[in-house]
Length: 40
Length: 577
Image (cartoon, rainbow over all chains, first blue to last red; front, side, top):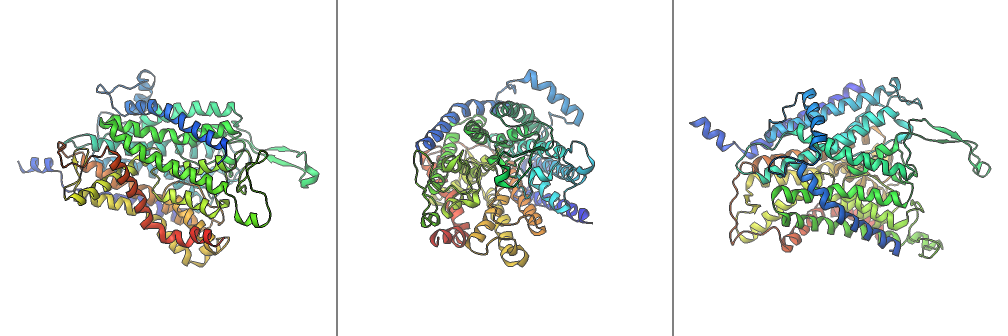
């Protein structure tokens, strides 16, 4: 049981990190060149 | 400080001054500084790398944007965690276990797996009493290589973000990882392991050997267990890659890991060489050695200051021992100073320089007991870690840290003169500054939150040997160590309880990934920008003035963040001793 708990804790942290990547990506904002390409 | 101590320190500085520039040029070539993409040793290393790419199905020509690069690092780290965790839990049923080690507890294995994948190497356990040879070699030593290589990969990606213009990608994580291991860490470690074996560091696959002590009557101990194991191979990468996790509990104070003054000198060089060389490589990769020299000067000045001050603090001796009539003066027959917790082979000089060097890098390696330092002597390595380990820092991540401080310094300079700050021709705008702030807040969050909680929880407080200023110093030191991915310890607390193994595990994870992710994001933001030409209003970042500003920023940020906590711990201890 303890194995499941500690592995879940670690996997949960890495999941949080994926969300953190998303947050940082939002801070940077959209890529201007990609946006221009989409508009054209 | 003794003449021998000064001689050793000057010898170390000289050895670094001679070896770091060529090592830095080599690193720069490995990471693509040459126009044609070639690097020394292509004939030897190229086929091996291509074989690894083919087996792992890596397209080495395909580059990644920052978020894909970060996701690859996370995926690799999660797989590393699961592999090392399983190996520890199952080691009782696996081969190469001559001393019959049982599986490590789930909480303990959780802590160790995180410790080694984050390049921290915090050890709540005695290696010789807990880990099988297979776990040491295939689990921990492999992580020593790959976690360090991941650190290199991250800073190389950040440098590409600074150096490239109007681009989208930061390189390929898998390529950077493989090239670092194959071309840098493996060759250096093999050479260094041979040098260590020549000086008496052991390398075998034996279990313990039973010996009869020659002073059996005096010690009332009829037999003694002499441990064996593949020590030199682990010791080499432990120092070269600023890991710090020892094969033995006594770490580099153990004569099988660090037998004499020559190995002590060589190991100190190994701890510092790659972090400083990476700064030289940075100068080549961005095409401006003057910029790199400024960073190098700041890092070296802080490292030397903390190392020398630690020696002086320990050489002054322990006031409590003075009151007991103990002779702590330096003479021809003794090194003098505070010798509690120190090996007479090393004394206060070698111990102080070692403490200054390992806490300025992310190496948790120790050659004496930091808990036995005088209060001011203990404050110095603790504060040195709290600066964020940028002097010169761990392999790769140390340069990453100082670059974050450099961005903050140009932002502050920009505020002073009312201009949009620039660094190497790239405008530093709101997005980058938000990410720098996230970076700078992560380590204090990973340290102070858990340390504060530990002072409020009864069972956590009960693990401290003394519930006074020294107890708080131990608590602060240990969370500073985990949050900075250092790994050294103040030993006056029991860190093997469930509370500490789990919270320190999270402290290490936060101290690693909550810094790397915003740093890579900054690389991803900068790589898209054009370079603007320098004008009369541009604040130059290759001058002594900028070096002074950068040093001030590093010291003031740490002072504002940690002074209240330090005042209640080592500072009170020093004033009331």
